Image (cartoon, rainbow, N blue to C red; front, side):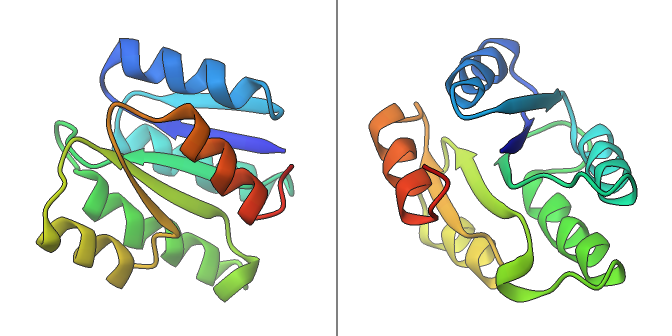
Length: 130
């Protein structure tokens, strides 16, 4: 399994990466633009990501702007619906508007920080990664 963590906070990025390394390979990007580039390059190489952990609050392009662009990249490559990467929003924002926006733009899950490792493992089981 391949995971991409898009997170601007170094400590959170490192913790999330360590958790996801137990499931397979895990790359990191410190902002949305780098994350989009890595995501597209992975699809072009034929080795796309299975899971993306995407922070909402980042400088420059916020996660809610990155999310539809990730789905657009997939769509342009003929990947739609359930065949796409599972994108889990990871954020300190626990309000209705952000949650609604995330799911409207095809997020697969919404995790409030600090990330609960057990909840993440439960998601991995639900999506049949483990």
